[in-house]
Image (cartoon, rainbow, N blue to C red; front, top):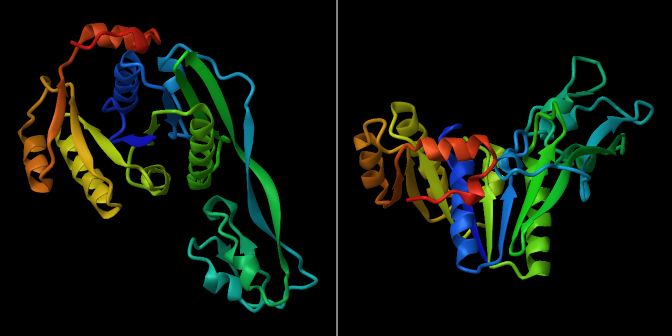
Length: 274
């Protein structure tokens, strides 16, 4: 089973589009393919495939800290331990947990000498599975609205995807990551055999390509470049960055009205890429 990430530093460069076109080529060759949408804050793979997210097959939970004031000695050890700065404590006051910053690591209740911090389980996301074709499945992770730290949702989405892939004897798992280089993207990239960085020939596209290639290098994920809308800008900046990292531009996709129409109608799987 090959695990391949479709990623990119810049949003709107065509990452999800390329992921589906890549899946289509593998399907045509008779491969068993699972596309895992790890852009959990804004998953759109199901829209581009003309699907609907119905009943979730699984819910994702995380544990958040709650304080038992009768046990708390106000020692401040939880504040010093939290690397996410999710615990605030005023002088002489009880610690306050900032849920939006919490990464659910559990360090605070582990170090508390009086066991005053207790974990509380809460739902943070859902998993959906769509059987799109006989040999093609879409697995979508979706974080609950307003959730700030979505890395745990991505991690659990990947785990469920890999378990499903083993059960179905999948040949290729394609992980469509969120744009950027933040924690949810790192969670999606970790453990992948290779990655494709999707970019466009613009100054911002070049800048963000440099960031994502640097990240992939640090994570030791071999990466190739796909240049989308290759005929609409100056691709010399992209070529310069590719040379810097000694990475090949694997494919150039020119702008196509036909592709735009297929995208807007949710029919990318039927699109013939010239």
